[in-house]
Length: 448
Image 1 (tube, rainbow, N blue to C red):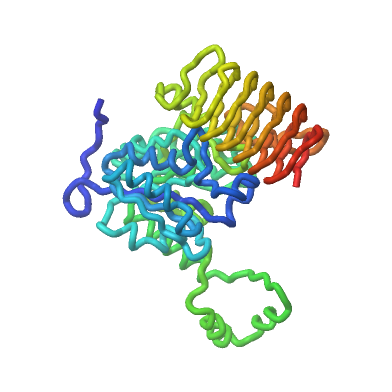
Image 2: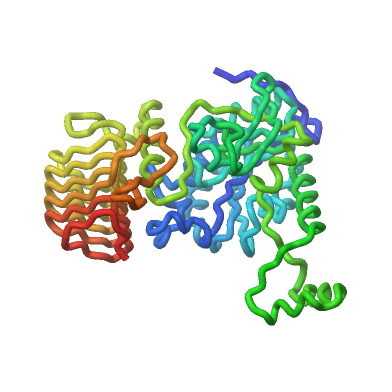
């Protein structure tokens, strides 16, 4: 059934044009995703059978008016080459490009740096999606709200428990009009349990002037600078003009990190037509390596509700939802599910039990082993009768750590690339770096 849309005329007199930007960060970010990010950039890590970034892109492709997508980050150009080729082959009508920052510029700084590419063709608005967000991406509803309210910005929001709200950007809004009245990034005290989901829709005429004025404010205010040595400290006593000349020697202006969350959104709330779409559907961040398991569960449950053909058919040994790659070999006596993803060429032996877990490509789980609340890394091997297990946490819980014997540990057990767990060995609540062999029982440790 076609959705009702408010007719809006674009800058050129026709229908308004829309683009999309996916923010992926860079290699110095995502350190919390280790040990998995040691071998693969976080946006390309597979949850529910697809790279994290592909879930974002799939949502964008459901909006037929979007014909141009940019991936912005500071990974090497080659990192996303294969992904972009696959997207171009599967969606020939959509242009997708990677725009590489020469250094970390921040979520707003990257947009401003590539404003000429984004503004080419004079689009009226564009979506911004953070790649490390797991949700249903209700972009069409955001677009509808944007047009109904003649908005300059729309943010996706969701409700979380009061005790965890201060870990996120908090939104105070008018319940009737949905207008954002106030925005604070990670407040020190409770102001709202409506939080920023990291998905935005901006009018091009509003966002770039806002970023420019934030950059001007940053440049005008006095700066507290930390110096690595006493030699650098001497420069503070140079006459002002000499310092300026000295700074100019660094080949151009000094670039500051400008972030949407800290530097832009609170000003938009004060002065612009800024609205929030509150989603009642699932949402969580994919920050730590362990958070990939609940994200995997959420995406699998969504695919199951949509009766996706990609999922394994339910049976006595398949408790849905379960994703099994076509090239994986699963013994018919192995019991899988719920919320399990099995990667390419993985081998699952007889009598194996796997639940709430991700098994990556070329991994082998030998007969009668048990894998619960865990990630088994690429080409890793779990021996016969071994147990690799984490601690159950609610899938909607935003933390993936638990306290064991007074020590905070990961609730998800993670085996990095090419790890080996010996026969009959039990591994519980551990993070194991790549290329390790575990020959004895271990619990609540980081194995380096």
